[in-house]
Length: 121
Image (tube, rainbow, N blue to C red):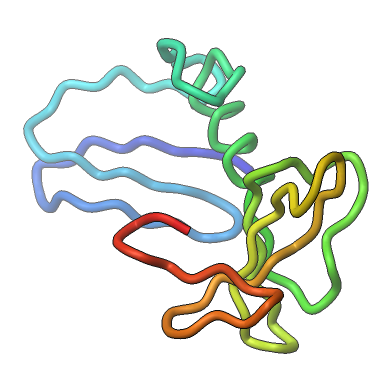
């Protein structure tokens, strides 16, 4: 994924597509650069040291697909929107050493769901 930063005197905004992210900022002096050259400070939970790697790392924690995400790219706390069932799920430990995709719902929970309650589940 390529990232382009453009400064123009016309309009502010951010445009994100699958291929590129474009940030337009009026009246701000920004040197032309690429996201991989823009360093970032340590952020909780991220190991990236530049904007490009941080965006890729964050994108790798969220899935939107019909098939269950599996493999080494899936970690505790990742989220998945199951497009087959229209359910939002989180990958978490359900019992000691056992990790599963658990639906997060608003409303009453059954035995295999977590309920959102004031930001907690």
